[in-house]
Length: 273
Ligand SMILES: C[S@@+](CC[C@H](N)C(=O)[O-])C[C@H]1O[C@@H](n2cnc3c(N)ncnc32)[C@H](O)[C@@H]1O
Image (cartoon, rainbow, N blue to C red; front, side, top):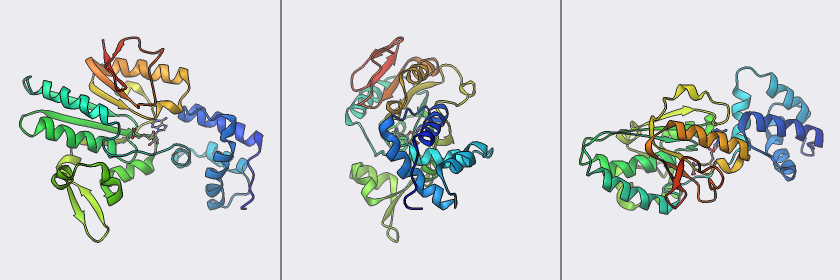
């Protein structure tokens, strides 16, 4: 089983399936990566070839095998307070908001991975906005992978993962669990966030109301999608953002030819115009 080889023909099947269902465009050079990541699963299921696994995947109506595949294929790397400049921007933004009468703030963390992004947002906004006022803040955190969402929902992180959190925030919002050497997030903060499974490429956008989000974070995921998929997604985000709402993307991503309806605010942040 260890020398299970993914043939070119089998790779093409997975390439098409993954593009159609995840929006991820795997170039020809990714054949070895796909082979390495899927081989373990093929073995686990006791199957004899990648084609058998493909058949299992495409005939599974429960969606469970697709969920498993998406966890294997996509990169879930994330961290607390990732992209420092964006948090500087948010500091100024929330300072400006405190001048306004309190109101609702709705945020979508659109590929939230194991939760570091939405929890960073919750800590940040609770510190800078909610604590001294009556702001109603809700964060929707979604991802295609049930595995990372499950981790996000536990809200417990190893000591190493918490390295990027300011010690004062760590003390205020987490409880240290000596037995597991981990930090558990405060329940009140967790209650600001709703976690849901959602596929940005094939998901039903009719579930959302136009203009419902003041801020959308879609960071470090569009980079895996091809141009037409990115364009469609950016258009949808535009529709879902409130007037003058903000779209945050990853620092290695850009809206270069898709800026229509947005103006750049620097640091990979775009405002709906
Ligand atoms: C690199 S992580 C980014 C996490 C976080 N946004 C950040 O910047 O730190 C990419 C995430 O996108 C998710 N993802 C990949 N394809 C997706 C899709 N089609 N719909 C929704 N999420 C997807 C993956 O499961 C993964 O958790």
